[in-house]
Length: 145
Length: 138
Image 1 (cartoon, rainbow over the protein chains, first blue to last red):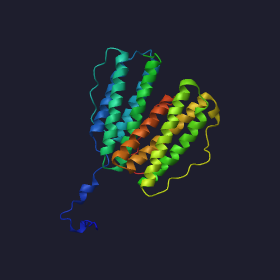
Image 2 (tube, rainbow over the protein chains, first blue to last red):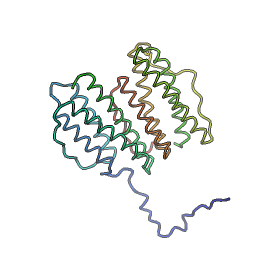
Image 3 (tube, chains in turn blue, yellow):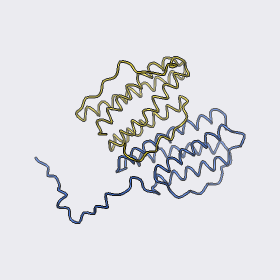
Image 4 (cartoon, helix red, strand yellow):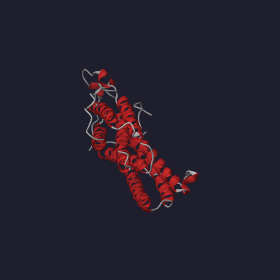
C-alpha cells in the first residue's frame, strides 16, 4: 500500500508568516515560573541571616542561574517578591519544593515543545533545577541553616 | 544533528562515563563507593538504552574506546570525585541535544537522564550549573 504525500502546491492561501514564529516567546509559562523563582530567591536572601555567608552565597548563585534561565526563555514580567518565611529552615524547604516542581514542569514543557531548540533549552534548564535540590540539601545537612 | 547522531553521541558519552566511574569509583570508600557503583549502573543502563535507540534507527552504535583520558589526580579520593562530577556534567549537554533531536517518550527519557547526571555532579561536590543558554541552533 502506497502512502500519498501531501503537496503543498495545492495549499490555498498559505500564510508564509506563520512559520516565522520566534523560538522563544516572552511570558511563556516556563518564563513566568522562572521569574517567580527569582522572586522567591530574593525573598529567601532577605530572610537568611547576614552571618550565614555560605547560604547567602549559594542562594545568590542559584538566583542568578534562574535569571539566566529566564533570559534564555525570552523573559517575563518581574514577579512580586513574596513575604519572607518565618525561619531559614522553612525557606530552604520551600526552595527545595519549588525546584522539584520547576524540574517537573520543565521536563513536561520540553516534551511538548514543537521546536527542537526550545526542547534543548528546556532540557538544560530542567537539569539545572534538578541539581539545585542536592545543592540546597547540602546546606541543610551541613547545618548552615 | 540527526536523531541517530544524537543517540550515538549519548552512547559515546556514556562509554566515557562508564570508564571514568570504573576507575574513579575504586578510589573512594564507604558511602561514596556505593554512590559510585549506583552511578556506574545508571551509566551502563543508559548506554544500553541509547545503543538500542541507535539500532532501532537502523544504524550501528559507535564502539567504546579501549581507554579514555582522565584527570591525572583521579587516584586521590578528591580527584576521583571531581572526575565523576566532570563526566556527569559533560553528559548534560549531550542529553539536551538528544532531547532536541527526539520526541515523545524518548525525549522525556533524555531530559530526565540528563537531569540525573546533573544531580550526581552536585552530589560529587560540583557547584550547580545554569547550563543554558543558547536558543540558536548549533
